[in-house]
Image 1 (tube, rainbow, N blue to C red):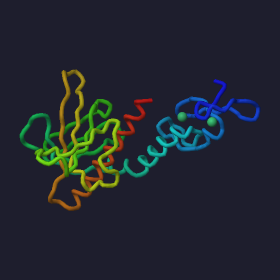
Image 2 (image 1 turned 180 degrees about the vertical axis):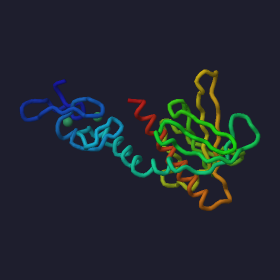
Image 3 (image 1 turned 30 degrees about the vertical axis):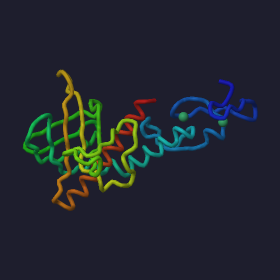
Image 4 (image 1 turned 135 degrees about the horizontal axis):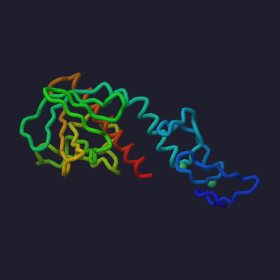
Length: 206
Ligand SMILES: [Zn+2]
Ligand SMILES: [Zn+2]
């Protein structure tokens, strides 16, 4: 490439070409000046990235710092698997290798993260009239209903495939209403999981 893919400046001896370490496209110095850690690709030190990638990497860095701890420590939910009527109280957490969701109660489920196809954050509020799932934000691609309005998260709806079986399995997590500390932890967990899935989607998308 002979021109910056952002501002169209022509490369010459003065305007030098740089590659974004994330997307690999070429940019001038000004359009590719941010140095951000990119843990996903095993760079420990900050590396040069274009503005668009820097934004995504900043979000990832924030996620690794704060949200990962929340996901690893887990939280208690009422878990409804498939069409079963009876929810089971389970502790849901991310495995230490970050590849599985572990659900532990009387039963034990393991869901491989890469097999999760849908993640919807369930929130209370609108539209009125619906029973459980009041307003859910489709995770993939869209913003949560209100960033920062996390107190409204009430649960999560997951769909995933089990290798060797047909179709998708559905799983619903509901934050337990009456336990105060537990509920706060559950809401934090839901928000962290929602962000994690967004990042996963964004990186799949590239
Ligand atoms: Zn880039
Ligand atoms: Zn440029």
